Length: 156
Image (cartoon, rainbow, N blue to C red; front, side, top):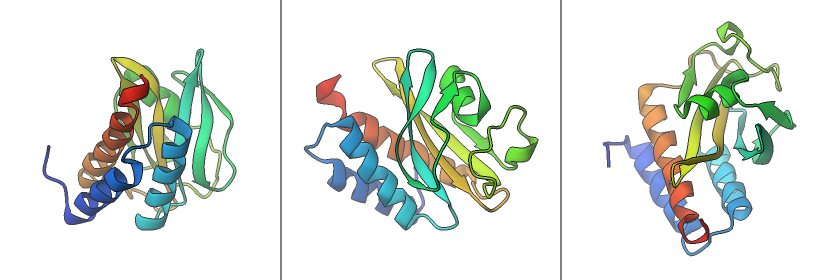
């Protein structure tokens, strides 16, 4: 595993404990989004979107009400899902096609969730601060997303 800052090492350890022996995708998404929202500073939304057909549908989250459906390839979430690559956006207003669910959000990071080479959704985290997410945050959220994906192993 790559080197994570102490904050993310602790979060990953907490996430593993929280999701251990539970394989329900909604329950684990709910608990992980709550953990992130309550432990990561300067964020205003943390949650999941799950792929259904050709669109992402909002799942468990913490924060303001969210957009319910996002087309693949649209916005930061749809782009992360379509490209299967983490999107770290310093200024969401400069991201072409950004979908403004919460006008207070200024930066965003979205990590694709891939199980058995299939995209199943994304982990999405927003911040009211411009340029909030660093490469360290990206590595941390990717590690947390992997804990989530690993928790589903017995159901996939």
